[in-house]
Length: 145
Image (cartoon, rainbow, N blue to C red; front, side, top):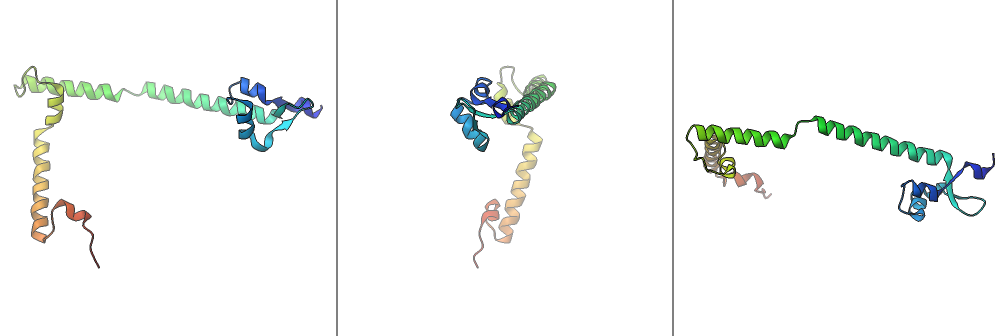
């Protein structure tokens, strides 16, 4: 077998979509580019085969990723359904009017958790004041030596 029979022209690999043009592919292959008997830039069959194998593996991985994403439940839809159910429950209890927008319901949050959060913040501010600190921001206060 002659050496030129073992070479694949870069133009064929560009036609297969491995690069936008021959120069870009030659740069990517760097030291693996040779000239055939008529002066075309080429690479070995082994390198070309590796490029096809690598592309096939990438496409297979993308396909698996797409299938995994399709198999997962749509979290956004689940969140919207949960908000709609909460909104319906609040309407049923008479806590909000029938025409209250979902954005208001979302912003209102759970009253008990809001009260608990506010209570914790108040306790922290009081204890920080008793220690002589300046509240929550004391965490960021730098000490001078």
